[in-house]
Structure formats: structure tokens, C-alpha cells
Amino acid sequence: MAGQGHAFTRRGRRRLMPFLLLCLWALWAGGPPPPAWRRECPPPVLLDLNSLGARELTLVPGFGPRRAEAVLRERARGGPFASPAELAKRVKGIGPALATRLDPFLR
Image 1: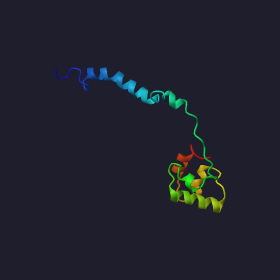
Image 2: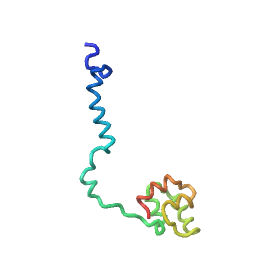
Image 3: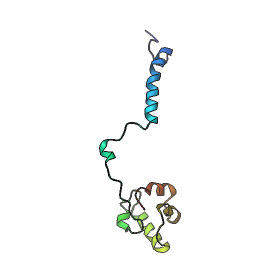
Image 4: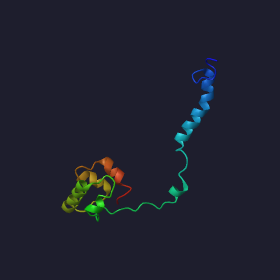
């Protein structure tokens, strides 16, 4: 009995290989398609960075009261922001990674 069909024997590896290849292909292909309810969702509403107040800015993912106040101070000092990427350059505490994550929410 020992060694028959075990994954580490030659025979076991031959049986396991098609399954592993199928799993790798599924991962490479992006997995199953999204459910119908996700495909039918409307695109998210983009928020205007230059018209949001402190309360609205705290609703943006990654923003708390301090970060919202920092954005408002910089906007009052330096004028409107041209893009979310400009936040990383002008506002202390907002780096390029957070600015990239904000792109889907702000314009």
C-alpha cells in the first residue's frame, strides 16, 4: 500500500499535475466572472476635491478630521487642486500611495 497514489510519487504527481495546472490557469485568468449585480452597478460618483467641506472630506476613504483640515488649509493657502495626485505634493501626510487610492473617488 505504501507509495500507491501518494502525491510525492511519480504516479501521484501525474495525477496531481492537471489539477494544479487548472488552478494556475484559473488564477491567471482572473477567477470567475463577477456576479450580475456587480456588473450592473452604476459607476461611482466622483467628488469635486475643491468644493468639499471638512465633513464631506471625512467620508472619503483614508481621510479623518485632521487630514480633512490639512486639505482645507492647503486649499485656502495655495488655491484649488488640479488633481488628486497634487494632494501628495502639497498636503503633508498624504503620500503618493494614498493619492493613487483616492483617484476613483475624487476629481
